[in-house]
Length: 267
Image 1 (cartoon, rainbow, N blue to C red):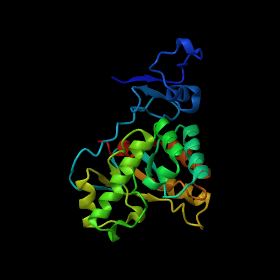
Image 2: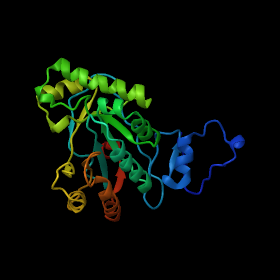
Image 3: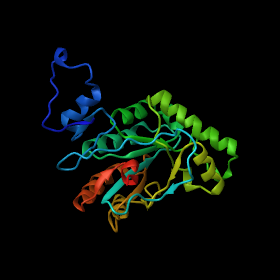
Image 4: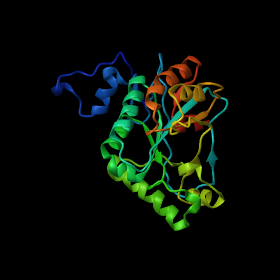
């Protein structure tokens, strides 16, 4: 059973009356940074201006599955998913600013993280997990998978699983995004054998490119947006954080419910 709490619910500030089940995440969500949250955690919705939208629990990589490649979600529902790829480098300032901005905007998102990034930015991973963002697999060291052996592919994905579990305290969603979008039939088969679906994108902001401006990011996301769009952004994008305000506002004004990859894939 999911019990939903919203903005009208206030956590007592007196320590001795706090039930043990209340966590720091509860306090954060109730303080107004996030609009609504649920008990148990994990079924949360960061909501727009009214109501509460529950985010589905992501699937786990529990065994081999059929090959699946998703470029978008359900075209019948007016939903969109913002996704952010990390690289393998340290980037405390950039990624933290995006996490904070999404929190302030009460906007859910899916982060595709590299295992090496998790090891170099452990507090960032833990903070993203604490705030309820969906965490998915983007390889360990960010190589082009079509140039790897099958053994190397398995190692890249499994090492990232371990990093997310050991550092972040939970398992990743069973979604894999190949670095550079580099994929072929062999890669798809290995990914499926490890229990993952491939998640690509329907909207590419190109926010990593030096010529991309804040206005271009906004327009690439919010012009001709379709139901079920999966938007690709990067934690190292030069204007990504500053573009988020307009991106989120415009999408919501257009009637889109912001959700996770699991949310747009849900039928």
